[in-house]
Image 1 (tube, helix red, strand yellow):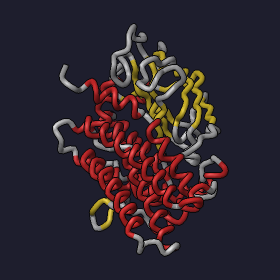
Image 2 (cartoon, one colour):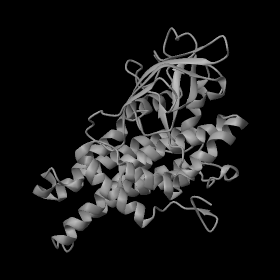
Image 3 (tube, helix red, strand yellow):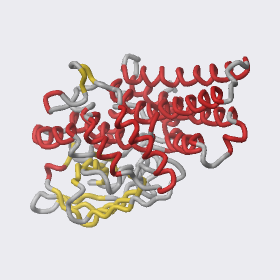
Length: 375
């Protein structure tokens, strides 16, 4: 069974995939384009089955399994890790909200790697909370939907086979609701090969340069009602349930932090510095911070707290900021070597910064968390 070892969910990447992802991370740092060979290896690995139920050929993994897979990938290649994270997120949303027909049609392909999924929610002017969407889907007399949308910062633009698209199907709200998403918004599962979709993955990002994060245009795309995910106008309800699932972008940050710590340790070993108490204390402090981030991500995945959704938000904020701090402090440990453009730590730092800006952004997470306190 894909993604399992002796009936258990496998969260370890193979040596072959690890080597290819490491090579890919080094190459895409200079080219800012996805490595299609590395993505093909990911599709073959069986890991993409993690979030798909057994009944549809998946590994039947939990949020904890998803977080562990993502962490393993991010330690080697954060760009591929966020591509995989988005695939897992869409798989989980289809499992939770999809119809029987959508389950049968999409989940087996998501499990075997023949279908790579991505989310396309952001757009210029919508704000971090996705309140003011200009993208629309209009129901036609024959029951189909015409989609017109211009999306930005879509991870996997041009390489995904299926997009979970957030659009407005009802009137725009007069005022912001204070949450993530708004009334009148609907999700659609849009195949990448239908007419009218134009990807532009060429955003020259500082970090996550191999993630194919870019623009997507949907110009008069027509889909039938079977492409709709969940009730019309109720996307905000689906969004609010995403974080309660326990899968956390903080897992990407934990992988980045682990990679940075390993680079600092490798430097200390090569320079014969491990005999110095100050160096050992610095490494210990970084390791403690990493374990704190890993611990809260594990807690989010376990979903055992009073409000798992809030724990997931806390995990994203804490892990993202912890990874940035670990990268900065590890670079200082390297001294002048940490200031060289070629050091992998600078790539990791740029990648770590990106997690804070991914939806929900850390600032939005704080707003949602602040609103949860009793008034």
